[in-house]
Image (tube, rainbow, N blue to C red; front, side):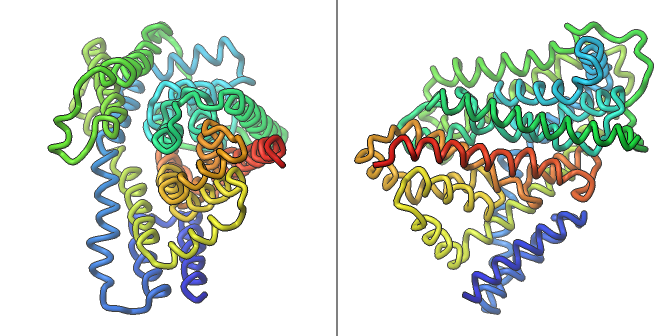
Length: 459
């Protein structure tokens, strides 16, 4: 019991400090060590847990995602230097009207994530566009993270059939399904998340306008009001199209038709790395395209590249730190006890799966991590019970995917910290809207889907 209380206290502390703006690079390892002391006592293994458990998780995240963070940050900077982000922002504002700026950012994020671009990269791409749109429409900057979250962290990540995001891919190997599993449920959930999220953000923007808040006093270097000599919209969106098409080609065509058996020498499989490789190649090609077509406009390429790389470091290290913390939590004996308790809450596989995935994702602050842990433990049991109830494996796939996108985005989540860092905002300023759009609404929608599907198979 004391160990469980210690774990809960640890989670409260790290969320509180993240909300107050303290860097997780500093707080995460300290709180991880404190958690070990609270749950297992001072056993003399603290340094081993730090270097072998915490730092292993930390380093593994950098290994997997540094190329995405770096190339994504460079892409965002090049889009800014070439005035492409500004051109897109101006075009969308002119065509949709200032009152549609929030919808424009949400749909842009949805398009990118549905195209397979990592949500970490999407934040880099969307921020320059969002900042210009919101400035033009005089919408508070503090609403940008919540808007990005709605477009990138919700329905295209977990609900929309065919999404290549990892949260929709992981269940495939457990249930023998594909990314289009339970399409009707996925579409209904997507529409609900998008509609409720837009209602919330629109209401927040209208309230701010009534109060005369405006965009706010922020030193955003990318925001200007001179729209003369902007590149045409086709040139501006072409790099994004290159990312979308290239990623689609490599992930669905090229890597699907080559022999990846050689990867066994490296201790991995093609299916484990092809998705990441596809995105990296796509972004690099887009970066090269922008450079080659804007050599005269980009006066100091070395400086631009240096700034892009530097911009990727802080978000990357913040996210790595919280992943290291999650690694420590997962290594504790008490975590196994909590996991077993969660799995035993209900004999209904739909309800049990939804609860276990959501809560484990909350504990680990990772949608993909929590999803993998949950399905590793109970997917065979879910399949066995579901057969007796005539529940399709596709439904289990979609429920698992939907459930991973709820409690995962608590204040200490890596994507949340990354997005806030990219936007130059704090938890205090913007987390409320992230919480509503990517925690409250997805959990509400998932609960509705779980209730409806459970009623359908009741008895």
